[in-house]
Image (cartoon, rainbow, N blue to C red; front, side, top):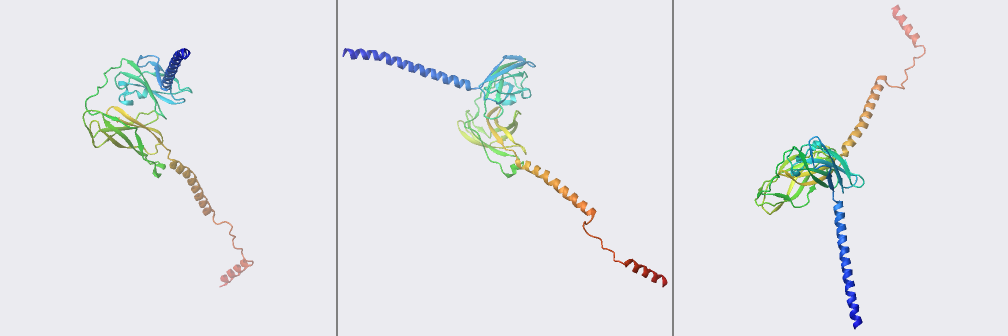
Length: 320
């Protein structure tokens, strides 16, 4: 019995040691996962946190998707109003390398809105990703950020989507159209009646073109509603577009839209280039044949002695 008690006493510390080792291993695994998640998140760093207009800073980034086109912008008011608060004309595009990193010089420009400012980097195409870093534009005005009021405050509660499909007319260049469906809720303390949204469509690195759309209805505090807003592009539009929804000065939703090429227009021009020259050729040949006259028709042969008969008849008329 004494030996059994001694063995149990010796096994207890060993079990505690194994438990401690297991906990340490789990903690290390959690730290590794956290580090990997942080490594996968896009990061932006600046060579200098402050510079004046006309200067240049170097923007470096890591954790982005490889071979991805990015757009770098200097924005005011922490980019609360979307890209309208950014110096869009002075932005720079950059493509990440095979490791998802980049380094690019960015000219310092004054954004249309006051600081606090940020350098905003976002993907142009594909899956949406963005990152920003605080930056101070020397000599640019600084104003406090707008406070949240107790009035109605609309926010998106679910994933947005585009409903609709292309028809035969779109295949021949008709303006493509969709319906933006978004579920919004009133997070404020006052009802919102007939809210006015702004829908913007952008292509590539260009800023959105905004259009006002009013939703008819009243959204009570703490309630939600589904909002359907029409979206239409110009005739012949194709490629990767971005549909943005703005309420007030804040962009509350964005949805990518891949518009197929109107191949019917291409087919029309191909047929036009083939049919018109063929028709012109046929018309020209018809004119040439008409000018030449019928070919292969033999002239009637003169009968032998016909000229003698003609001479005798002439002499008889002379004698009369």
